[in-house]
Image 1 (tube, rainbow, N blue to C red):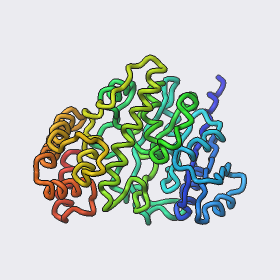
Image 2 (image 1 turned 135 degrees about the horizontal axis):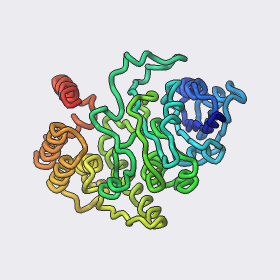
Image 3 (image 1 turned 45 degrees about the vertical axis):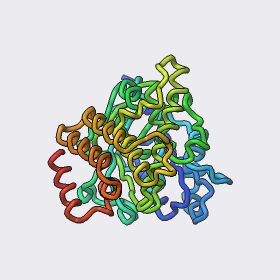
Length: 364
């Protein structure tokens, strides 16, 4: 019997001013226990010593320096154009993979797969800085949390119903090359940030989504993340609301080309993740809120209904529904406190942090 040929894999690392994390990320890509892997590093005109680090790897990596900063989508497009793998991973430069990541993904890949999504351990700015990383048993937090089951297989019904399905962030995603050739290049002005959201939204049009519940790497949370704004609650919420509308517009445009029902933008009324950010945006800064006719009460009620439709434990759904109603009905100052406690963990009183962990374990 002839051996089954290996599937070539590309790991693309987009980087901008993450020199302090970049070596750990590149090393993790090079240390995969799967042989047929090319590593491509795209530097998006960094101002730190990222290019020096890239040069130190010589021909072990394919370095793609950009002369002008273009953002997330531009770096993705540059890296993909230089790649050749049948399976393509985009690894954020501040994250890293475990040595078995690629082999785990390849093991579940089949001809119908458009995307594989995996959980990631959450680490902070200090963890995993040295070669070899940190002991996995020392990490307790996982993204997405295990109590939120991934959506797998044909996720289009859920995506068309509410504009989202349960997936993950950049470093936990792998894509089929043919699918990417169909939906790329990513529109660069619209997705200067959040290019992974564009890909994960459009890829299910062309195949199934496979899910890996074990953690294949580490997702780093730190003050410079685009996903972490700290005290800039309103700015973060506004960006995410607008990003959702951009994702859905791209999905609607692409769906019409393949004969799928065009997605109305008010689909997000069924999405508790979107409604949470929309409520935060409205509460924090009504003047700059992107949806003029929104009201807290209406968003709170819609969020409560959407929460009860989630794929999660009854307790989790009930707690989230109660949270939506509280933010929708409480006086604004009290509503802002409740909002910040959920969306910005650093703002929570100590007793609420302990209570939150207790509830999470109870729901697991």
